[in-house]
Image 1: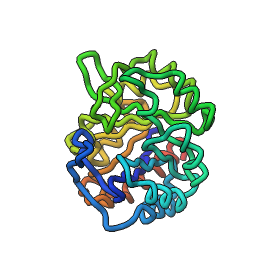
Image 2: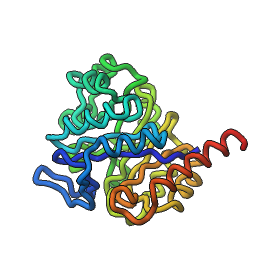
Image 3: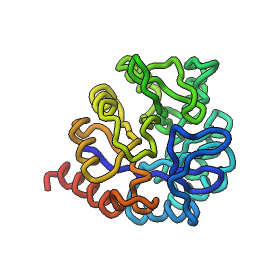
Length: 259
């Protein structure tokens, strides 16, 4: 069953929603910047019973706000952003249920299996989420690192997903080309993930409304969860409310239990 997964995106120490493909060292195109701290949103999710969401630190200067969110909803949020074997345990101890990693796993644009093994040895498979955020290429989709600006040589294929699934507990996949644009999702990617992911996976990018929740459920046969950012009312959007997302999750739970 497809569930809504909440998010808290941090940029320069603020809770923001940005256009994913615009993120560089100089800044980003910002859709929304909150006057509230990360703890406000973490508490909203905690009170609503929304677990399995992710806190993402986009660039430097986010550690304080990240750890504030994790302390507010301990065990209810995952954390990603600059994760490596030296700091992964620090974020788990701060309250993260899982750590999310991308860029550390690549050296000179090539995927590093030794680095993945080192990180897995540090945190364990069950607390490790691999971020396979990607951009479209002529071949399909390739993993993108370095704030989604560097397209690596690693293609997202059924074989890649199967091999990586043995090393972690979940995947997180931002479709960087549509992230933050509210212009529609990458439906082919959702369908592909639903067909080929052997472990839980959350898709992010372009979701706008409740119809998109239903579309992800249908395209993936209920095997892909969905994050909604810029369209959500708590992030200044007008496409869907947090209450509607909570109601969707409850309806999915009832459907799964036969009520």
